[in-house]
Image 1 (tube, helix red, strand yellow):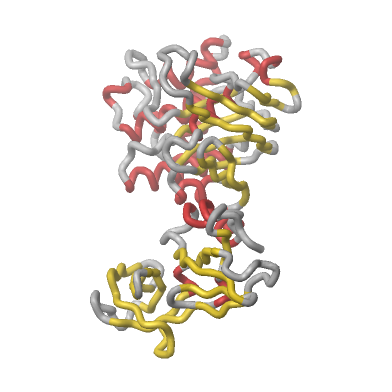
Image 2 (cartoon, rainbow, N blue to C red; image 1 turned 90 degrees about the horizontal axis):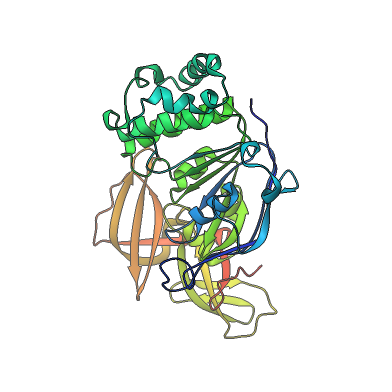
Length: 363
């Protein structure tokens, strides 16, 4: 049985170190985070290593108690929800299976504990059918007899065999190679569609975040920087960190200053900007590679690198001039060679302005 839950974080903080066991420096892993997940939401928490993603996930699960703030399940404080009624399933990076148990026992443990063994075969059949992975072939093996990908499949099946309210993933595919990661994402997406549940997926992989989630929360240094769909984060980042973290290839960042209501950089300039900014204000411009194009009347640049993007049917070309570099998109033909000079033009529709000191977006 799946019951979708609203999860609300209200000004949640968590600090480690100092008086904790083992001492060490004080680290504020999560700092005043407020967030709401609606029933059936699949949210990815995306950010660099050490930003507090996994700590936040464990606070949502009730494994860590926040120092400040509170977690609500359906408007009830998590502290007041009995453990057996929370309905939380977790899938970890390392699988976390019991070493001496066959997979069948791991997957069916929740139902066995509640004297519901007759439900186990049908649950396994459903999961195996949805994923198409032949889960039944793994059930008589112990973790040591399973590959990393197979262990994660068993771990996900174990989580789904519960009476779920919330499903939490902590970089479950981080240890898999590229081929198995792709397969595992497809299988997991099928399961999330078949078993709609409020879910949080922690990852540093944008492709996984895009493929699996409805919304993405970008995290840095214990803070949530911005929440939105991938398209919202890509097109309308609230600050320079989000702009540079989201998107592949990374956004081009050009430094410049304001003069008479226009922005001027080292190689590009003359673009209108808010007229209330004082002359001389330092402003950075973010421009995605697709907003640069080859143009014989454009700015010259010496080619440093050319990457053929065959699936996208273009070349990604990185050039430099006067100590500044930028990447642009060019057709596959003709092939551009490293070291030659090409001319590129900037489409002003793609300009994103940021305060160079604070990184905050300038509207």
